[in-house]
Image 1: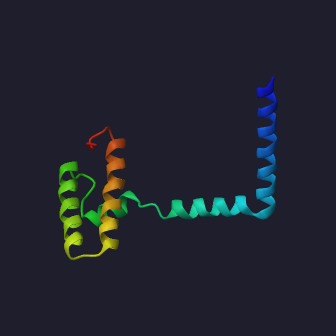
Image 2: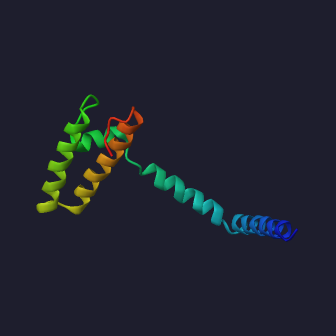
Image 3: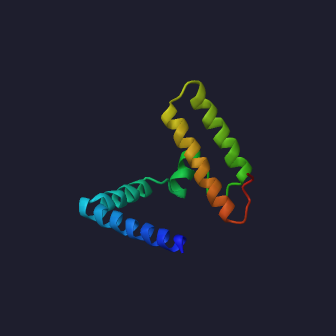
Length: 105
């Protein structure tokens, strides 16, 4: 019985928080931030351009390209480019895993 009262109080508090958030515009701001972050996600095409690989490139070759570019930017390059190279590998890793697991973990 006490659990039911607690659950109802929680639901009521949650509804009130949502109502307050919509009055303050907080909910809308959170949604805009989510959309903004999603629009900055790297596309497969961009990832392939950064690493200099085509759609038919084997995963092992992608890893070689990644290693070369990442190391070049570690020694005398920029952190920004190194970050882009890393994100490109992450993006393609997800793509290759989605195509049947050809990207090793």
